[in-house]
Amino acid sequence: MSSQSRGLTYGVLAYATWGLAPLYWQLLKPASASEILAHRIIWSLVFLVGLNYFLKRWGDIKRVLQHPRLLKLMIAASAFITLNWGLYIWSVVNGHVIDASLGYFINPLINVVFGIFVFGEKLRKMQWI
Image 1 (cartoon, rainbow, N blue to C red):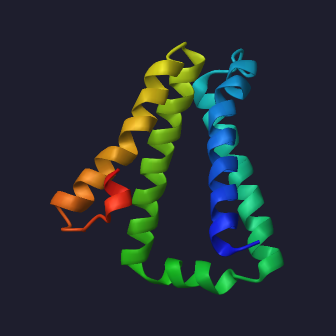
Image 2 (tube, rainbow, N blue to C red):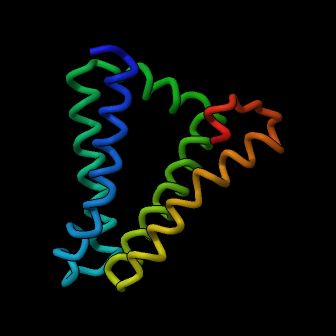
């Protein structure tokens, strides 16, 4: 399988998973959005610790912890991801699936606009289409 085909397959799987996620969050509705988010954070931590153990990538974690700037960037990224997921889970649990989906549809388009006008990126013809 070529790199491009693999990327397309992964993209389709990611979007399918993303599209089915609201069904899963609805099954967890008896729990609050903050409880669901807390579980997501804890189980992600457990998974990533295990992954780092098997891949023996502790040096990367140590490097981040030793450089305050990198640590601040990681904390900021974590806070934004937590806010993003918290809002998404809250939206789904409280019946705002369409609103949340529209936001996630529009967000990449806004990122492209920022790339063009703020960072001066050039789009090819197919990207414009």
